[in-house]
Image 1 (cartoon, rainbow, N blue to C red):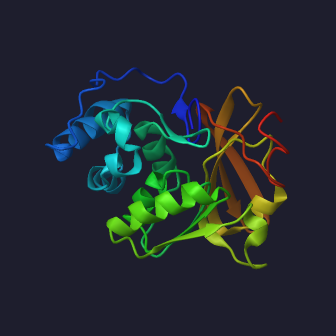
Image 2 (cartoon, rainbow, N blue to C red):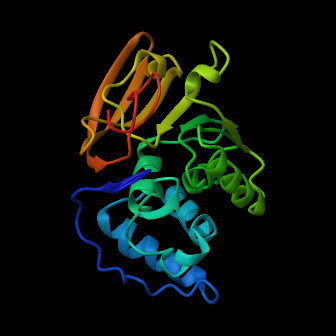
Length: 241
């Protein structure tokens, strides 16, 4: 999260989108459409299913009331507890990189606001999202419930260790930065699975796509990003590293 949880791409082509102009009591769909066109499609993302999902999820429902006029701006926004809702572009980019297919089972590590989980829930029927902060998880749950996304399930836990052994996923999306790709995360990928994760030092990371084929794992870079640290056995020991 750029400047916080989930992340802003750094630097990506600048969007001509407007700042601070959203009237969420009016035409949020119009603001959302401008967000998709000016911030996402204009930067080269083309997956029609992902663009449709971004249009269908009202981002303002995942933003604190005091900031809802900025809900469709081109940037991350604070959501409390030192976390943020991601820049819309980075949510779309991570989702597109996961190459989701109907029937895929998806794991998200770091629910945060719930916005990324909502987008995923528009694309597949099985999303499991893990959040270690109870307050964030409760607010995300309420927002997701308001959209009727019954296929999105939230778990309050500290990392993948809370999941039963042997449970694997077709795609794993990590919304916080890790110093390296841990074996614990690789082990959660099904054969043919894709892991999207920011990796690097605390101040700036590289967004990686990790793919599994049998016992082999390949990594490719998706560009620079800035996320808050992933805390736990698969990440950092503390927010300061």
